[in-house]
Amino acid sequence: MIRRWPTALGVNLLLGVPGVVPIWLLWFLAANWSHPEPTENDGMALWLVIILPIVGLYTLLWWTANRALARRTSLAARTYWLLSAMGTFSPTVTLVLIHP
Image 1 (cartoon, rainbow, N blue to C red):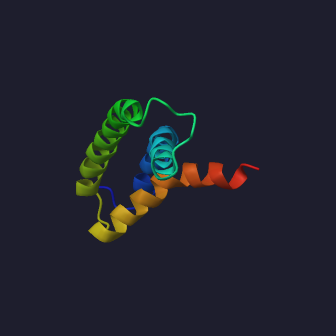
Image 2: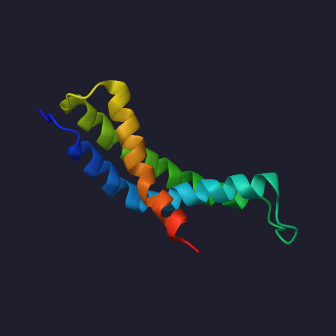
Image 3: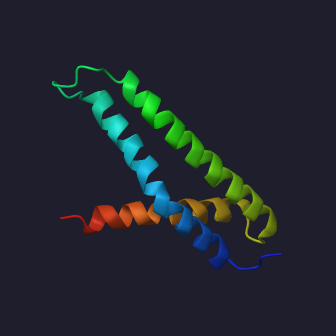
């Protein structure tokens, strides 16, 4: 049984590095859905075909890894999922903060 939180945080930090791509794609979709680019003639359907499989596969990978890890840790459920979300979003937040 995993007793401490560094393992859960480390796994989610590692999952957050490739997670930058699906998070950015979701941000891109949300930004263009509300204010579409005037030169975008293809519409949003093409983007949905690209974004949904990528985000779906990443979500499935993240959920599977965290469900297996959550069963083995002694952290409370709320604490574990908050820690895993923070670990996953940390690489994206870091890139946003260091970008000029």
